[in-house]
Length: 283
Image (cartoon, rainbow, N blue to C red; front, top):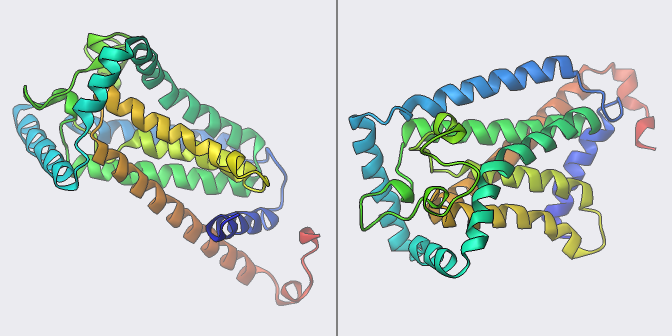
């Protein structure tokens, strides 16, 4: 196990020891309304540019070119090549990717969140919840301040295919559910990567003590696969994936700072006599 894994695991383990109640003791009747309220705010901010007015479109196009030029400078502008390889040689796989894109992004994240809420130790739940909420909040601020066109909406010659429309899947941006819940100008950072990394992180927290390195690495294949899917479907620039990874790392860092601050607050709130006694919960 690497030193980073050890430090991360120890911080979460310390929080669990100090948390008191066992698994499934979250106050779900408060947490669920909080999550719903957060999602409502998320949807409102996400839809700021959803009307795609002339001003929004012009600004988003300019930012889209900024992202493309940054990729060209970094030599990572591979969206067309990657999409072409899959669409023309692995078309059935692309259909599967379109289904994957339209389902797992939401369902798996929701499933992991509900598992944490009803089955995880309270400190693990609070830590993971803070990671998810912080990462999403940072993403929303970026969407509001930096609306940008994804590759599928760029002008001819620059754009990639919208494979959910040209190849097919369960939904399309042009009709149905995705048309109403998606912000067309919110690629940077990729919340697909933030949320997929959240799922991988939660699983990793539960397998991190495995002696097999492969077992510890397997959860992280999910955000890697998600990154490939959103590039092939024309949803994101490659640089958006890097932005999502940076935002997720920042969210984990913030959650650890919150854990430490709360831990110090609990210790300072305990009577002095109790602070001098050995912590029986650690045995």
